[in-house]
Image (cartoon, rainbow, N blue to C red; front, side):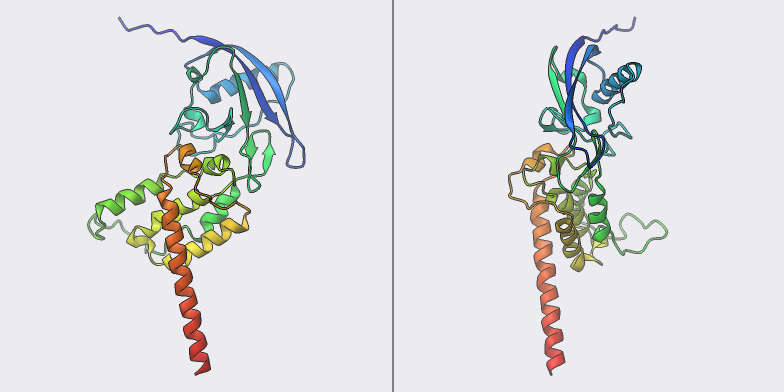
Length: 269
């Protein structure tokens, strides 16, 4: 016979941020849910809450989700002061209600950052990340028929480090966890991913300058090396990538200054 398992149920109180639009001041509202199954995901719990609100004639809570598999990063929420909730190395959609106790009060907020304005309730506009990516997070390597695996030899340690950086899903937890709302971990992961591989070298000299410049333009704060970003990242992106970004930026800036100096010298000759 198949083993029969029963899920526990808990009663919870929810303190949720409600905000009609970017111009609205916003406020917390409290709700109660009884008999919540502990094997239910956090987003499923919010679905249950919204069904309850609809039956009561109340506007449901707006929140984002897509894959619900920890891949897309759209489910980003600040849960009781922690980005994505109390489980490390997991996104909000990978959080289950068994992580909470009976009669817990759970506070749910959107990401708090100037560069991530609130659209409504728990939904934030994170297109600032897209603009950083478009500023230089691409390669000019030729596309076409699939190359043989050994056509471009890449040392395994560099390939592994590049793959680790590429695991970034752009959720914004690093920004939400940082007291300065810095996007350095996200930006550095995108820069490091390409700088470590030969396919990323065609734009290497200008990539860091363009992406860091766009990051500053978006209004993100500076990195003060508190490592909160790494602790909050659901993909455990290392802050070593920030060191790579700073190195790439320095080399690119020195090269640009050298080219300008040579141009001035040629013009004056």
